[in-house]
Image (cartoon, rainbow, N blue to C red; front, side, top):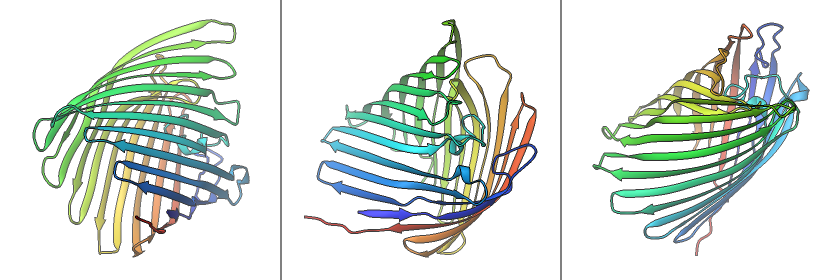
Length: 362
């Protein structure tokens, strides 16, 4: 049994990411979480539950208390592994606004339920196949978003070519259906990718996948008229990682598509960079940054949204189970169709406290 509570206090000078008439506010959060884990010879099981609490000083309509719980179990034999994940979470749509709609003014709450079974089998000493599935639903508390149901299935084959290099093939298919006030959508996505992992040395590693995707999107209006759009494109997920005794860094480059909460399908191009340095045994400095462009993958719209995020930070571990960090975050969002250019600056103080709990064995 273990637990954590990560209280934070921040001041953001533009909490709604407006181009004009900006509003600044203080924002406090806390996520108390308890986790129960049990490990046997062939089985690992964990259950965690908690609350994500948000409080604003002036914009009190954004105050929320969102419960969540997660259950995961895995059963292993000599050559196979079975897994199951169950998830329930309530969260604010503002948390995913940068990757979804770009709307930071909404106070909509989304309830997500999902189940994710998995299976892997060791064919030979060098070959592994795996199958992963998922089923999830999303329901929103406001009518400006579309409730949805998603299903996906993927299969992967991995071959260990050398001690440092392995590669394989991944094939996936997914379906997302959403229903809103003005339309209903039915999106099918198919993806074929080559995957690789290459340890260049003890401190450098490359992970990635590159492939081809197909999107078949159907949108039906209230009068029963259906419009079908098909699009194809590349999929990419590349990560280069460095881990030394003092410095740790990573570089990411990706192109992906995902369902939007308004019934559309977003295509996201993203570049990210992270770096941290251990100044002393207890003091760490770092910086995170990302640049991304989001556009519609299901039509030929010229509307694009660009987001920039830069966040330097300093962290002090004053005990083995606790640390405090001070960070500054700069955000920028440009929307081509609306012609807006909004930015915000925030300063945050966070304390991370992990309770090691107690253990029992027999």
